[in-house]
Image 1: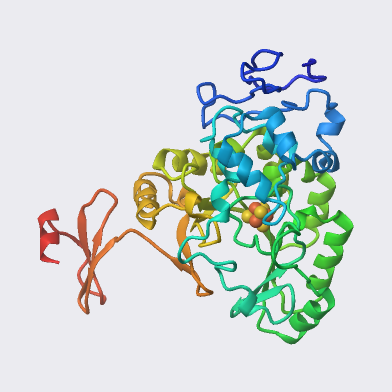
Image 2: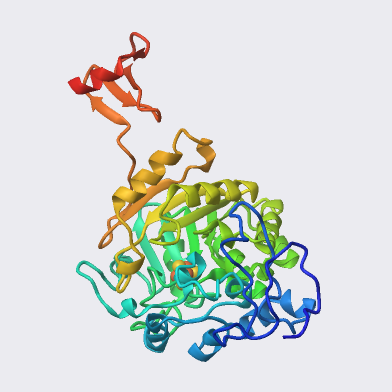
Length: 423
Ligand code: SF4
């Protein structure tokens, strides 16, 4: 393997330049031993040693060099039989595609790598477990116009594209995303604008897909301009995983353009602290500097982030990137997702381990998108122990019990922990 044409700023673990003992070429860039969850690291150029710095920093180069085939994946990774089988399925299901930036985070020899589990398909994706659905959030039933989901009273979800920078194996919209699934996304832009002009109750539009930030600046500007021309629309949001999969896309020009459409907020999607590389941190910084409030939506995934230590590292690192941990989603009941789902009990344990033990800004709201189209339902550990006309009895993060009067009256009183037995 030839030497990189530029030097990475942060230490990364590199090993022999020759083939690894099992015959896989490429440089294993990440090992669990060498990586702390707290640090921001760059892994460029990693498996692409011949990329120039200009190429690496060009988001279109990143898209052109995505890893999209079994042959490309196994050039660098030692694949398990179930991963190989999973990769072969992707011609007819959610496509396989990973940007070089993100692919560099995958440990080549570790099938349990939390980054790998998110983007390398497994054979289990072909198995439909009881209760799983093609459209677990019931979006199709709430689509008054193709490409527009109107489920909540004052806000809509506008699906502007079916493409993403990389594809997440648990994607709730995998039936339409990536262009190879059972359904096609046929967004009717003009009909959507007409619908929004008529529906004056809609004050909040969320652009998603697919990923809106894959559109060119000009196309995105055209959409935002049309939306801003609708008088009652107060609030624009973009839901995007591009800052994580493709941080190069967050150019100064894009940020300057987005800034013209304030108030504009963005929800990003990070599941594991290692996804927060130096490039991602800097991209998030550019968005924050453009005055865009940033929130994070994580999905609770087995073997990725289903333990308090990983989640704590993630939320603390997000705050350092000026991103507020916003939602922790229970993984939707999407077809073939059983191997990535974990129990609600586990989610509650994680929240219990965070709430009160760290700053409230860092603790996301745990939610379940009610199967079939019920919308997001917040789920919390039981902090309200008892509630009647007189009082509410509360349990704090240490397990201590307090009473608060239901009506104005005496101040809250600390009762003995044993008193909980009475409730
Ligand atoms: S980025 Fe979002 S829409 Fe795209 S595959 Fe991942 S979860 Fe699905």
